Length: 238
Image (cartoon, rainbow, N blue to C red; front, side, top):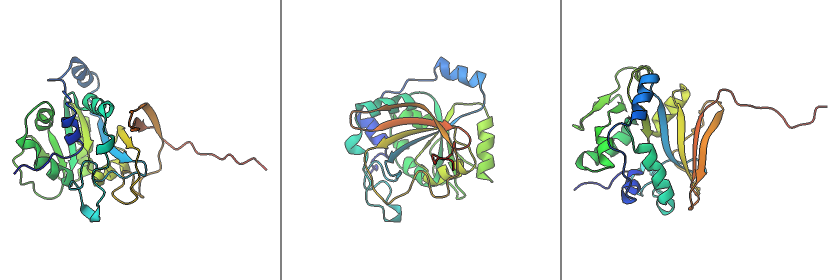
């Protein structure tokens, strides 16, 4: 029996996204002009910062989480088209172990316009445990994960996308390895669950690259690091 697809890919499939075939001339230009690879974090997140279990109650129940599926009622065509743009070109994947195991249980059995780019992507996995999967183009990052990712960024190749992988995201944030956050902020609050920005997140500022809103109220926002926080005080000088 094939398990149900991991989110957000289940709703992407159901909305009929058709990624572009092959690599575009723009992708080739980016690789030629700027060999430094970019890491983009694609995350569905609630208004109170939870990223756990967006696609269904069975997706991720770790820690006793029982509110899974909070994206489904708000995932409209506008959000689906945005995901199509973000995943409709050549990319590789950087995944934490839990997310990789979820993906590996489903995508190798699938074919089609959504499955093919994921299956054809190189999957870099941050884990200290052996991988017992035969999913093609899987690479376990050896040794120091942070140094392995830094080395990966210096190589030529397509952009690197991070899906899910909450623990890995904390490591990327700590070491300033994220080039942009591509967020879909859903109009719900949950309270408990794994947060996108954990308590240990570093003190840093970001700039807004672009933003839009879907009819169902999902805020689509892309942010990139912008150095120090622009702090100050509104108190009148005495």
